[in-house]
Length: 385
Ligand SMILES: Cc1cc2nc3c(=O)[nH]c(=O)nc-3n(C[C@H](O)[C@H](O)[C@H](O)COP(=O)(O)OP(=O)(O)OC[C@H]3O[C@@H](n4cnc5c(N)ncnc54)[C@H](O)[C@@H]3O)c2cc1C
Image 1 (cartoon, helix red, strand yellow):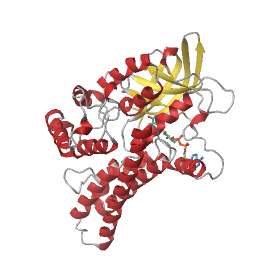
Image 2 (cartoon, protein in one colour; image 1 turned 30 degrees about the vertical axis):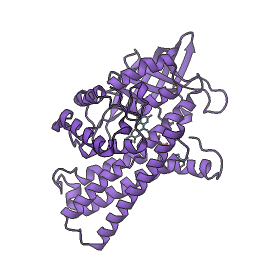
Image 3 (tube, helix red, strand yellow; image 1 turned 90 degrees about the vertical axis):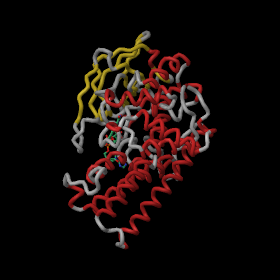
Image 4 (cartoon, helix red, strand yellow; image 1 turned 60 degrees about the vertical axis):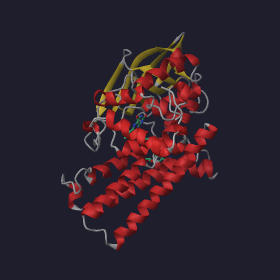
């Protein structure tokens, strides 16, 4: 289904989304604490796809909604207000835009429809033991011979690898020149022989990320996205899109709602300290929203994400942390025990745990400060990432 979503009045667009969610997203899938396995959320994914609403940021001719940044925020707001579940949609959010930018016509025709339809679930194989912040030090090897590339090495912290059908990964195909050279971006089917996935339990008790081992995994060179040895360019572009997602104000906004509810439930609403904090938190969310819009605008008008996006990632993730810390403090005993101070809300300790990760993934915030200092403010030498 193709329609001009941006031409609809905002109220009509919101009403359309609300009605759609009410009809298609079962109550049992709403307001879940954790990301569920794809089997659980796939009917909702497929309903979004069938209605042409799975890819809000993709161009219309490739099956997307082509939403303006403003509309995209409205879309996110409505989905979150209704508590729709987290999806395994890295293919839509991260890989899709990179295929659109760097893929051959054959790759676009092959991958994009399957990603949109939920036939392929993608994970991101960038980080390795010894190559996280300093990603360009990666060692997982890709050997090209004839029409195949054979991968041997290890990835780590690969979110949802145990659910994924495919992995987009960075491999070293040459050690000539600077370490950013000689990296190739490869699209790998997880069913290829030689792949072992081992889930890792995180601080919150979930198995959300994994170690992935590649032992002589051979795929055709048609699975290379962009040029051989030039995968760093593709990887950085994808990280830019990922950082806009990581810098979305949605987490901080959700945390603000929880803070308001907990302050109220704890009888702290008349306390000057908590009133100050609520106002500060509200300003943080509004500032984050403005900053997010300006970066999202840049993507839609110029098709690029500037290095300055690091500022967005830092402010959004730190606002989320600050607000969740205040919520935990306001909740007192009810925050850390399995006593939930406000019915229907997650335990504040859960949100606090949740707020740790975004400051680390998509590049740790310290690294983003280095990037801003070196590349935006021109202090010192070029950052590694
Ligand atoms: C929830 C979660 C999901 C993730 N999902 C994925 C995924 O799907 N795919 C994937 O490839 N990776 C994923 N990651 C990995 C993530 O990208 C890395 O954890 C991150 O890049 C940091 O690398 P590292 O863990 O090796 O830490 P390190 O690089 O070892 O850093 C450790 C600490 O040292 C600091 N530090 C390091 N170098 C510098 C420096 N030069 N200056 C100042 N401080 C520095 C860092 O900021 C950090 O605080 C995920 C991580 C998390 C937490």
